[in-house]
Image (cartoon, rainbow, N blue to C red; front, top):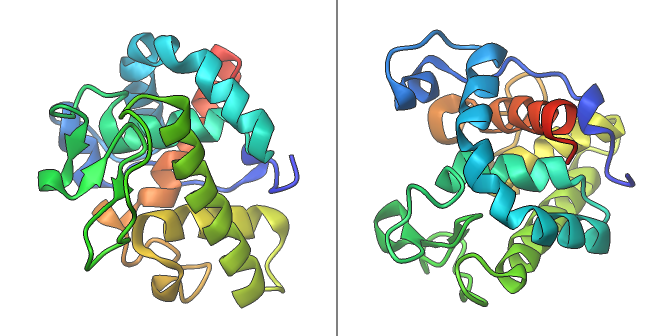
Length: 188
């Protein structure tokens, strides 16, 4: 894919905070994999849309699935399509808060249109990180773009601490580990 190979992105996986979502667990890649596996059954109903959108934007479908897993637990954490206290919409949790992302929700919460919007936002942030850090390799820029999807590119200051301001202090690391699991185990 033109945005880097998700399988070559370095990751430390879930932080201690994220690892506690499904009960006491140790931080790391194995916990991210376990959470991706927990969401895998629910994810199947979105496979066709995920693959279509991934192909349309040149983003690995496994990465879209991983963001869906992290953001909404494949829809399981949403109430009528809403999450984050009504500040985010859909499977990919597009930020509609005027003080945050300020996006207007597009499509149904589990629609292809929504997945297109979320993926467009991701692609936008990968581009912003590429421009901001041209010396980073493609996989580093991809990881930085994933972190920026969570907190904006203005909060990405270095590769060594790319997740410093992300939710749980691990957003890109957790998403990358989940994406690698979806690619290896579910063929996304």
